[in-house]
Length: 216
Image (spheres, rainbow, N blue to C red):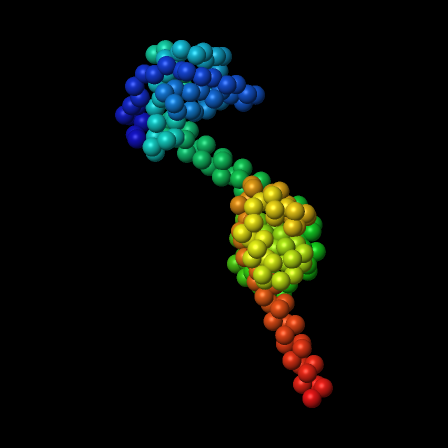
């Protein structure tokens, strides 16, 4: 949408409002949106107020009217600056999280089975930017995989764990992190744990074969 179009939605009434420190969650016609107090200024929305929105890129709210009065309207330049500021904030937060992660990165790396260390090695070979963006989450997944593999031992046990409910998983591996709900990493951890269990099984078989040959 171009600024010159300045197209507004049809008027609807606000049906529900909840407030927090930074702004208001407003409901209209079964659809919710957020309006920051910084943009609203001294205006306090009320249930029953007539609301109109100006949208861009399909869903981004660039403007809001209450009872026919324009409360705010963001120019293309303002929208672009918001995007730049948001990306910069994400970059800074990602870097800060990586600095904190680095304090235990060596310990975590050394705790991995060699078949999993290769994943970290490949990631590190892609450069610092990729490391900062992905390594903390990948390492978290792999260290969780080691918890599973170290506790359950066999590929069969890991497979049964994989198919169990989350509550049962917590029983089987009590040290399992709750952060999997936030990171959606549990399935990847299970797959990596299965890989470790299979590799260890293979290593035991090879060790037995070598022992038998030495005795023969």
